[in-house]
Image 1 (tube, rainbow, N blue to C red):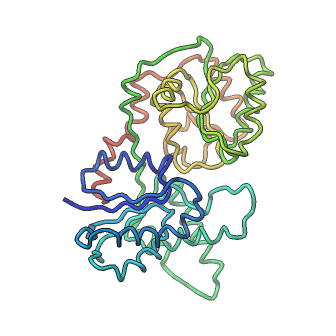
Image 2 (spheres, rainbow, N blue to C red):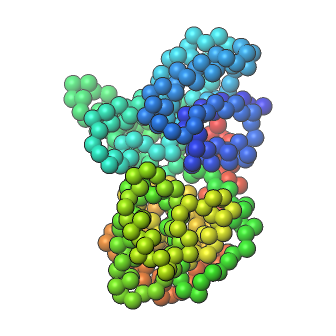
Image 3 (cartoon, rainbow, N blue to C red):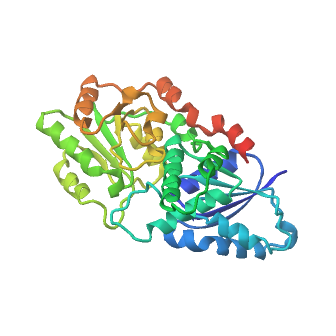
Length: 359
């Protein structure tokens, strides 16, 4: 059986969710080395030498792997250079990298002069990898465009064909999603009035201000609705969340982080419409989960969303309130059959063969 080494310096959130599904649905022998999901900048700079030390701690006979799978928080160029002198290491092992995100278009609240350091790590990791997978075409194209900008800055160092080489060893692989618990759930209705769902991180890159502005416009127009706001709150979360909790207290069915996945999907099943206003989204697992649970998606007509859903579920910026009002007045949600048809392409059952071939 093939032996695959997984190196994940940010083992939490979507990264952890992805790897748990991979190990469940793609049958090979795995060795996982991971670090908790915090201090991502430090992880990008130091995880490669740390992982090499973990490999050295293995018995020499256990250091032979057929493939190494890294996330973008691993500096693959440093990793490969440090593995050269490791006894028992299989130097013909393919090193693959999965891009959940790329640093070229990751939005920054504040301009940081060291940002180039992290985009360059992404660039060098891709150059040093044997294969690259992106979770969306938007992710791939924004990464390659960022690499092109790096090359343009170096007018006296021409590197012809680099972008083409990166593209030729890349592919788009949606991150598989486990739908079993959602499919087994009994859909619940807690309100006859349409329910709007927000289920994203409570951070500025998810643009919650535009979401609550749209709700304010609905309120001014006398459009009635109920509200479920989910997602993880952080220190420094936008102030609009606290203001909206007070303003819409009579409309709120739930507000805050769901303590378990079961409770999370039960809340999704109570929704009619799920909304994104993100400035940043490389894929969109939370939206797909909500759609699988029956929510009609209303999504920006940019980022990764046009790859995931039909244009009738997309809206141009500044038109969210109008789209929401129309959806609310229709008073309908997805049937179980429609929800599955819209999301089956993202399931591990449909993706496992492609991952097996890639690995």
